[in-house]
Every structure is written in C-alpha cells, then in structure tokens.
Image (tube, rainbow, N blue to C red; front, side):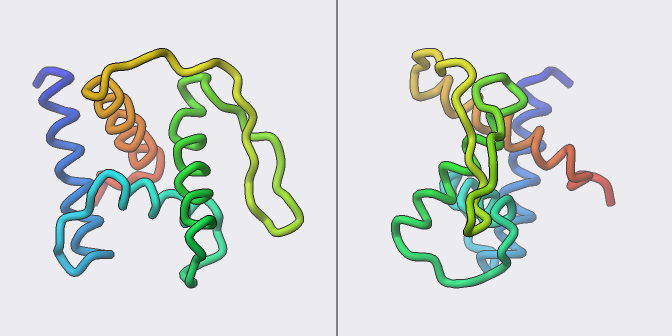
Length: 119
C-alpha cells in the first residue's frame, strides 16, 4: 500500500472511530477532531468552554500536532494549566490541499503514538 492510500485508510479510521465515540455517528470534521485533540491536551476533562477558549483549544492542538515536525516547541503551562508553545520554524506557505494533507498526517501520527490503531 502506498503512503497516500495508507494515510487515507488511517484517516478514515480516525474519523469513523471518533465520530462514533463523540458525535453519535455523525461524521466529525477536521476542525472537530482538532478541537477534541485540544481538549485532550488541555487535560481538564469534559466541560463547557467559552468561544475564545475553543479557539485556544484548537491552537493548542495545532501546536501539539506540528511539534514533531519542528514548527512548535512546548514552552510552559500557565497558572490555569493551559499549555503554551513557542514557534520554532515558520510554517511554509502551503496550498489548501497541502495544508490538509499535512494536518491529516499529523493527526494520524498523533493517534499512532496513542496506540489508537491497535485493538
């Protein structure tokens, strides 16, 4: 199986599994999955978040997802327990399709480190 086909298969598995677990089977969007990763990385459990907190959760997720690629580095936790990252390398200018592939690869890799694909 080539890399593209493997990514597609794993991506669909992530979407299906998370959609069943968190969206009553309604297909989650990439933004929904990024939000869930942000909640996981914050580590404060399930609670109501304000609009600005939701944006911050997605930022946390993006930083965590792109950290292994050298774009961000964890810096510190603030007094409220929110993680902060610093930019290591500016993201390259990517076309929308390239951005989508990069973030899907990063999400699949994130879940691979959590043994998400093992039964």
